[in-house]
Amino acid sequence: MTTYAQLIRPHVQQELDAAASAEARGQFSTAFMDEAARTAEQPPGLRSLGAFAALAAVAALLAGCMSAPKDLDVSLSKPTAAGAYQVTLLPPAQQAPINQMHGWKVQVATPQGVPVQGAKFKVGGGMPQHGHGLPTQPRVTRELAAGTYQIDGMKFSMTGWWEVKLAIEGPQGADEVTFNTVIANPQVRP
Amino acid sequence: MTTRRAKWLAAAVAAVAVTALAAQEAAKLPLRDRWSAQDTAALASMRLKEAGPRLPDPSNAYENHTGAAGFGQALFNDPRFSRNGKVACATCHAADRQFQDGKRFGEGIATGNRRTMPVMGIANSPFLFWDGRKDSAWSQALGPMEDPAEHGGNRTRFVKLVQAHYKGSYQPVFGALPDFGKLPDDASPGGTPAERAAWAAMGEADRDAVNRVFANMGKAIAAFERGIAYGESRFDAYAQATLAGDGRGQQALSAQEVRGLRLFLGKGQCVTCHNGPQLSDHAFHNTGVPPVDRAKPDRGRAEGLRKLLKDEFNCLGRYSDAKPDQCGELQFLNADDASQLAAFRTPSLRNVAERAPYMHAGQFATLEQVVQHYAASPKAVLGHSELAQPGDKHEGRLPIRLSAAEVQDVTAFLGALTGPVVQPPPRVR
Image: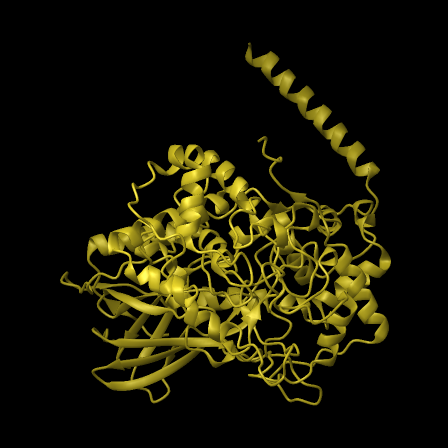
């Protein structure tokens, strides 16, 4: 698991915490901000987000899906195809309801774990088993902190295996990575 | 109250509650039909109550205004808003016919080229019409008014009708009607050549004022339509009973309907797109439905996207009440996806048995034919069908294979999705 050092200003961290706690209550913001990228200035603090990603992956596995391949790699932290970057996807702590627009976060670092700032992204994906793409065209709307970016406009219209593809352009050149995620029905409440 | 008395009372209340619960348990039968955890979760997610309160439409500031809804109801039923004075919204969206017309093609001034969709559930869908060319209920309502095959009217004539007949309904909601100078009788940016010329000759301020009143008519109609919704069906009662462990409640569905429901969730793959409380993913899919004219197949969503983006009445347009960041569906519109060619919106399956004929151009007369179409999964005439073809090696996706008896079972189950139509009482005139 890559240790991820990042620089987050306190007010940005507050915003992230507030969003996480709203998501934990089942409230997903569909709004987004197209403001200029905010970069970090504060002294470095160490945060491990790997455990969070692993938890989300396990939850996705447990949820299961009849049609998803059994050996599907649902890890949310992996190197890009040519190894230029290490990328970690951060879905909301609680899966957003089907068909509700929401945001994800993505962290990009060098293979050595140094956050990559000012990267440009193309977000794509879809359901490989169904031959259709994402119902929306998500995009990175801002850099929240050094190497941490906000993806807005995510939406899944059905349960099952979805791919989330990122084409990344940064100082180490262009590279791409494909993540798998399995969207399940929520826990039953009578 | 002393602490001792309070404790005694609490104990007594608890005892009564336990007894009542025991009596209730005794009245229950064990589950007749058992479902896997995964299927139970799917059943739970398909209950109508999962839809929750209707989603707000930030682009319509008047959607919860009762005065607007009353005005909208009057407009919905008023045939004067048409070229021949005989076509109202209610002509094709009849309150006693599931707010649709039961015909292959809509019939207004002339015959259209697509099947009329029902009004119920529109607040739940981000895009409207079979091709999703509109992104709100109010903007949708404006389309047919100027469509030459439907109302065949034009916006200056409509504004004059509002001035003549609905000043008293309009002004308390939307404010004073603008003082139009000399408006042409018939003008519109999308009408006949004469109407387009008259529109082009109007001043910018007049055009804007006419558009504003026209948009407000749509917002009033949408406020009325917001009160029209699907009610719970036998399926909802069954799903609820299954979750509550209530075998007696499961009798809401017959054995054949339950077999159909299992196929719906399983190898019939229906739930792939017909999911959630409206039994629709609100997305667009090409499933190889045969076009009416093979030489000129309907391009569906691919064309709808083009129209949506240049629509002056969309969420980002000047007549929308939404802030740009509330227009997520447009801001993050996936306009560049080859799978949208000849793709059509997944319709809700609620009350579907009351709504023959089926598909975007009424291609199938019965639900059985629809299910048979999916069992056959033919190749698409235009674009690519998402359905795996028999013998196809789709990654992890099996072709839909249903026997004749299974087609009957799925068809029977679809009949269990019928519930009442919730609608506002008729307006007192």
